[in-house]
Image (cartoon, rainbow, N blue to C red; front, side):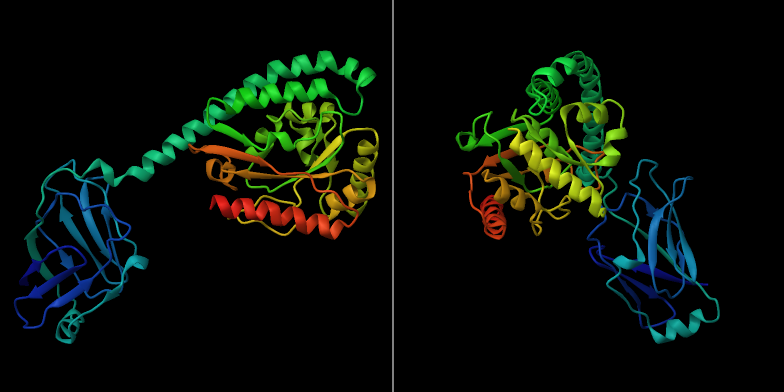
Length: 372
């Protein structure tokens, strides 16, 4: 068995030189996604020619390097508190080998390399900031849902008590229910992030019906908009209404149900919005139809603007900023730190749904671009 040596530095490549050959066996790899290697010594290392490398650690605290399809390397740890680290074959920039050594490896011979890595200190804790952030966001997410559930239970009882009187005296606007919803949203978001409002003077009076439209970035958009304290009716998927407490509260608030991809449900929703506006209530739409996954503004559907054009009420464009960063789409279990900004733009009026749609989208897009 031939002995060789391991040459550094370990900043992008390792040269393994066989004593029985003049040509070295070279491996080049990328450190771009890996923390600094831990302080262990290479007491015994066996390898063959390879196409991919994986470095990691076993439960017995033995660092190892796996050579895919050919063999493996065993590295005994010198320090039990060394860091765990690994590479993926996909992170390789390339692989090189000497033809003579490749021929030798065909005879199932091994090159034994003995060396020792420098820097025997423990790895810096700064190598794991992402892990700490993820754990913190998950804890914040759990706390967020605990707070919103506890507050909702108590306020739902109050909503149930008030519901008969709301139906008798304020059947369409239901201001009392919306006030309770504002209290619920405010108590939920205040401990976790700050909401800043701009353009509150552009809001119409509480008794003036209007069509509100906004971009849609996150599950937190509903909480943020409820803190405005306006009595507008959201459009929501029918499946949400079966959720205990939250779904029942939405029903009592007069939220409009909608079955996606159901033309009859869409027509009923359209008629109900028209009827509510004629009775003095306001409605709220997310014209994109769904939440944006990349934060970019999607195309607007014209349903909301057709309702505004036919009823003659103003369209109030609203821009939401920051909610997608705090709770991204598809990651509703986490809550990142940050702040939210709500910009209320000046009302737009007109009889052409196309112009109302394009005008509202341009205003919201411009506001998002200014923030970016």
